[in-house]
Each structure stands twice: as structure tokens, then as C-alpha cells.
Length: 188
Image (cartoon, rainbow, N blue to C red):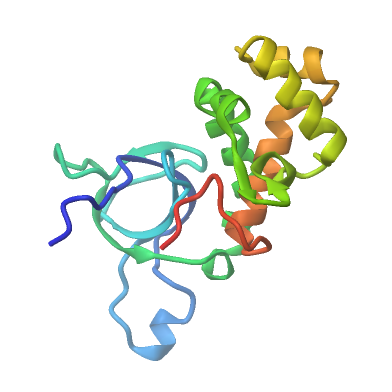
């Protein structure tokens, strides 16, 4: 067993299917309440079986870790892809990503302070939507003078209108599978 495996501790509810997956009744599968979730640390998309009788609010934070008893989740049934999400989950995803990015501002600002070249011709900063060579050089020059300490600081010193939104868009692109390189979500 690989002890280096990292698991999500907390997740956010994208959708709750109290009657299980659509079509479960018709196909004869056992009907279990299902919850679609996104992890707070690695943006892992998960599907879990809910404890019967549990209620969920969209965007609610739910503990799924192994350290203490879970109050609402029976077990994680597995990782899922963006295409496996319900339409409700897909519509909730951008809002939850924004919430996670805002809650983890320090971690995301650190990306701007520490990002390195991905290849000899491409820098990780250029993987962010709307960041070309000009913004990349501005970011590199500014962080050399003094590391960034907030999204607002990045905005004021580089001219990028909304750095948090840029990060959110990149995370969503990675989840959808629209990007070859992953810089914010964990590869599996």
C-alpha cells in the first residue's frame, strides 16, 4: 500500500441524488443516495454514498477524511470525471471553485510567487488564461522586487484585472480536461 497517497479531507457538495443515479430503478441497481463532491485540497471530483437520512445543501462543506467519523458520508464510491457530473453539479462547480480559491488565497498567491518554467519555451504562468509573455514578464519582475502578498497586490502591481478569477478559470479548464498540463488539480 502506498503511504504517500493523499486524500481529500473536506469536500463541497455539488449535487445530492437522494434516489441514486438516474436510471438506477429501471436497471435494477440497488438504490442508494449519492452525493457528488469536489475536494477542497486537490479539486478531486468524487462520488460518495450518503448515510441514509442525511440531508445536504448545495455548496455545503462535508468531511470525508479518514481521521474521524463521518457524519453524512458512508463511503467514497470513487473519483469521477467532469462528464460524469450531473447538470446541477456542473452549474455549481464554478461557484464552489471561486469559494475554495478565495478561502485559500495565500496558497494561490504563492503560485504567482513560485511558478517556474514548464518547458524551455513555456512558463507555468502562461498556462493561466489571459497571461501571455507580457504579463508573465511583469509578474516575474514584480515578484523579484517583492513577493506578492494578496490577489489585490497582484492586481495592483501587474495590471491583471482579477487574478482570482484567472486561477478559477484555469482550475475549471483542468477539471473539464481542456488542458494538457495540470498545475492546480492533482493528476491521477
